[in-house]
Amino acid sequence: MRRVVVTGLGMVTPLASGVEETWSRLLDGQSGAGPITRFDPERVATKIACEVPRGDGTNGTFNPDDWMAPKDARKVDTFILYAMAASQMAVNDAGWTPEDEEARLRTGVMIGSGIGGLESIAETTLLLAEKGPRRVSPFFIPGSLINLCSGQVSIKYGFKGPNHAVVTACSTGAHAIGDAARLIALDDADVMVAGGAESSICELGIAGFNACKALSTAYNDTPEKASRPYDKDRDGFVMGEGAGIVVLEEYEHAKARGAKIYAEVLGYGLSGDAYHITAPAEDGDGGYRAMAAALKRAGLEPSAVDYVNAHGTSTMADTIELGAVTRLLGDAAKTACMSSTKSATGHLLGAAGAIEAIFSVLAIRDQIVPPTINLDNPAVESELDLVANVAQKRKVDVAISNSFGFGGTNASVVFGKVE
Amino acid sequence: MSDVEERVKKIVVEHLSVDEEKVTKTASFIDDLGADSLDTVELVMAFEEEFGIEIPDDAAETIQTVGDAVTFISGAQS
Image (cartoon, rainbow over all chains, first blue to last red):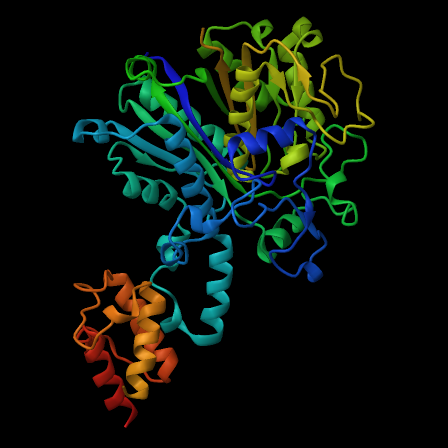
């Protein structure tokens, strides 16, 4: 199998628009949570979320006009806009501009989303009820479909290789990166633009997750305290939005063009719980098997793992994952560490695995691990260091990023330092 | 410029993000103003909404230019 490396990064998150802006705020222990402004949350129980900060594009704010012409942005749901922005950042960062047809044929796109154009679907349904079918926009369907992130990116850049989209709820971003890496390893492409995008902070999205009892409701007055993985006072996740995109590249291809190499995709593992539609299996078996499969593919013992970027959503399921990781690492749990960056970003659903893969890559680049903020009173004793509240300088040669989704779908991606 | 023509041009400028001076009566939505087939569907919907009329699909297909739209809408209103 061919080696696959990461050569470009892009992200739009509730902390900031941009990779370095997001990363510095994450290391600084900041929270992306605040009161919901995207709609009037009066009727829903949860009145807080991690929204992408909008602005003129300076100081880490997101300005849609920087990434899509207004006439085009108006035709797509927000998740596609975020995907377009993060993809442009990643492609620019990688410096990958295919100059001939063969290179374009060998460059593909695999961007997924957990839910897709939920807000567009909700708004169009209301329009349909009020004004009838003749008022439904011709851009409604192509502006809401999940694979149109991949479609729009391929059209913008002329990338004619594999064009695919993952839909595995909160595992989407991790599956997209893992599957895209596999396409390169198997010689279907030399370069893949991969990741996830999500924008479900609308009344229907919040109402739906509230009905599942999945969201935090106890911290409406102190939103920055609401996402608190592993803490005994956690009461549900905080919905986030945004996109994370990486450029993956075959190792020799990257080396030949002198590309900056962030890290290598060493392994990727997948599993299914076959247990429940929203709850993980209580013994954490699905997550355990995804991690074990990823390490096996990487040819690494669990003791090689320096850092785990946890799925850790700030729900009761956190301790199930913690148990699985501890079981997997064995004695190495005493020296490794694990943090949940969802404490700061909230849960970006289909984009979560992608931004967390990027955080794992940056942990390797900078030899520093981001903190789990709001971890004041751990719910359970653990020998594994959960990086409470303050980032730590550490040796990080191998990092593993976990993502688990509704339906019992699990993915783990292992990244390693390239000497 | 008639009231209808002015309102049609305003809609075209807004929906296609084109300069006002390009939106002449002979300008073709697709050939001159950068629209694709989906844009023209949306334009027709916007005309229906603005003028409170219904433009049947077979009539919509004959509306290729700004002038075509003005003529059809003026006829439908009278």
